[in-house]
Length: 107
Image (cartoon, rainbow, N blue to C red; front, side, top):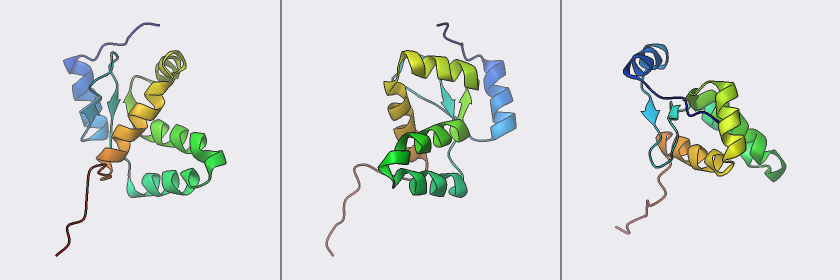
């Protein structure tokens, strides 16, 4: 599996096409994502509430939000490193506003 490299030209093209984008850090491959729209987020939450549809929910969210590498290369990457699906889904959810360490302070 060849790691598609992110270049400044590719980054510029992705920004032009998708607006605000982010690169996943902490993994050995170049993966760029965008935040989900409210409708994409709601679809993920609706599907993921049914444990039988949880993987379908991840597939949909990843398909909506991964902008690099292209679909076939991303599928090859996640076949070789299946844990990336969970890792990248979690980062996308953070972009949507989910905060893992948020707490409530009694007033």
